[in-house]
Amino acid sequence: MNQVGRIGVLGGGKMALAMVKGFLSAGLTKPERIIASVHPDDKQSFMQFEQIGIETVVKNEPVVEKSDIVLISVKPQVVPFILPEIRPLSNNKLFISIAMGITLQMLEEQLSSSARIIRAMPNTPALVKAGCSVYARGTKASQKDGELTVSLLEAIGTCEEVPEIWFDPITALSGSGPAYVFVMIEALADGGVRMGLPRDLAYRLAAQTVLGSGKLVRDTKEHPGVLKDNVTSPAGSTAAALKVLETKGIQILF
Image (tube, rainbow, N blue to C red):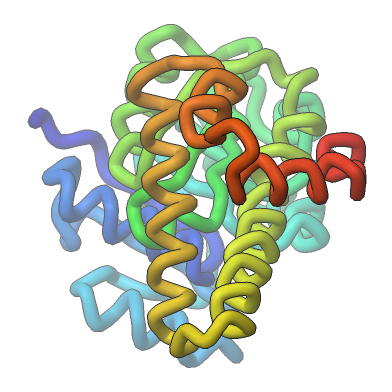
């Protein structure tokens, strides 16, 4: 696979580190072609980036100056403070922002008029290269910039282009969705424990059940209702359990 340009990372943290590791393992770049800035108090992130051979600094300006592609991964409340300081260096750069709630308009107003900007949203399963990401292009970002973004984000899972107006509902679905699934896994495992299973086995079975069920929906493209019916025998235990869930209004809750 062809390597991308030099990558800069503004902000450390687990997601940024997972993305960088994904880029490296996919062969998209090499450690010496990445530079990251982290807060001086964030000793752990500093150490983690340095351990994989990434040049790590505490100032943002060198990151932008040395990079072709800049990943904005600082906390949303920090974004308004860093954009003015990097604006003079942002000409003709590609910026990919994963800062939650920061719109393309906000970014375009604060960076150079020639900056190409993409807003992206991965989710936490990206930490194990199983994330689902979406992105939207700003007014100056080209189709080629979009294709480059896909190649980067597919290193940590799947990626699709969407209109920016969909970001809020997607946040509720795939952004917050892992938390809902974790609750379901915990509940399934708790049920297994109540019936006598060891807890570690119950967690493994519940997690694999969710993983396999999701893969079945994705790969077969069957409607989830059809797949549900395939599991549900007449007058069986699955039918009885589903009746309880329906009585509790599980679908209405979502």
